[in-house]
Length: 252
Image 1 (cartoon, rainbow, N blue to C red):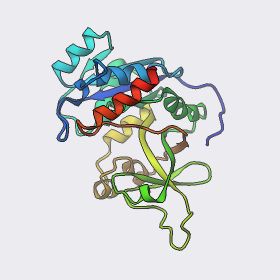
Image 2: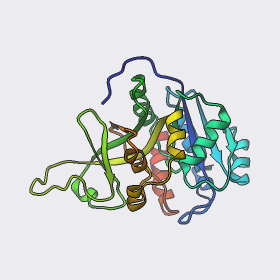
Image 3: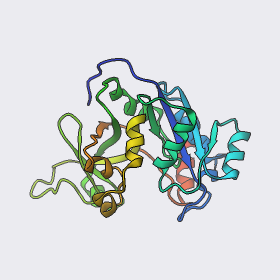
């Protein structure tokens, strides 16, 4: 949605992987086709041609040790971070990433990640005015009614107007209005990532439980990039079988 204006800056991918999870403790170590989930995320992410390096960021010795054994680059981070974004910033600072470099927050529970989704996310940064990007794709009205599916509305030039768990826009009499589901991958310029983490959680962020609203409430624009790909996340142990089948098909 954004016109390219120059070459891409340096881009790094960071995968936050904490052990603690209310619904699925130890999720990064869950075995999928003989390898821990974090390994699959790393292997898929490093296939993105725009990334200089992909690194795992964890707070747990078990994950750190497993990553080392599998030759996955890993950094140990603090165990008191409020969110994965905070962990990504600490890892980026440990790597010494420059202020204009792009940092991609790669969800650690997306083992079937399509590398081209990351490429879609990075392309707008050829425009030096772009500070943050994220992804969205069209979804049917029935899916838009689900509050677990985050929706987004945006301008003609791709600037996010709002994210919500409610169905936005309200369809009224137009049942063909069209809905876009948000895909929770983000890329930030390093200085914008620092600014975001330094800000206090905002009113709408706390109401909707969506941290990206902190950016919009503080006048930090988010560029929404449309993609044909769909994320397949692992939220609970019962999701492992479904993802295993998808990855088995990709390898086949």
